Image 1 (spheres, rainbow, N blue to C red):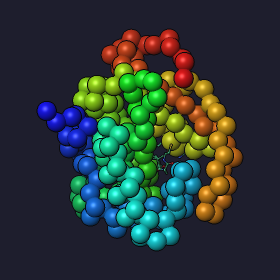
Image 2: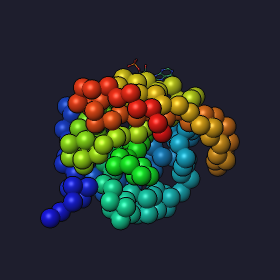
Image 3: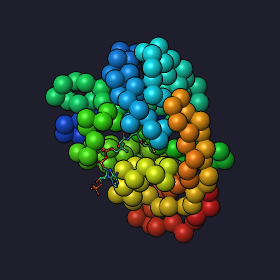
Length: 196
Ligand SMILES: CC(C)(COP(=O)(O)OP(=O)(O)OC[C@H]1O[C@@H](n2cnc3c(N)ncnc32)[C@H](O)[C@@H]1OP(=O)(O)O)[C@@H](O)C(=O)NCCC(=O)NCCS
């Protein structure tokens, strides 16, 4: 039997499509991953050499299968076939049957509702396809766009923890805001559970 995380379906959402990330996506990933505005609130980047994008695909995304996680989706602009971002379950939760969602999008595609739509598609994939009990998502307090995407998708705010990171060109000193959705919430039963 093949595990569900190894056979993630293609998802067609009008003008975008989600399909598993490929080696050939390296140039497109470098394109948005080298933009400091895109990576401002992320724990990686900006890329300054295409080798970093190559490394990320091989050592971050492809290695997920070893942790029983899907490789991760490339977000594709259907009209041009350009890969414009990623959305993925990047980390398993400790001690619970769940994972954390992450996402990033090329700046030229911001403010069009794309990531709200992509996150919406990931929720049934997490609960129905992968069988999770809970999905976690986090954003830095200063990242208002990410906050909106998370709120619009009905995640419940749990609390925050301090977050600091020295990046290539700047230092982040902020708060990490943590949200979840339980399978009970997904099935229409709001969960009272607020434990992290
Ligand atoms: C966060 C990100 C994925 C959002 O993608 P997107 O496709 O532009 O998001 P959407 O268009 O679906 O929704 C964005 C929402 O945030 C709002 N928003 C955008 N910038 C904002 C800002 N500076 N302040 C307040 N709200 C903002 C938009 O108005 C929209 O909300 P609305 O529909 O209620 O008007 C994108 O900005 C990105 O890739 N950022 C860099 C990577 C990143 O930070 N990833 C998340 C890490 S937690």
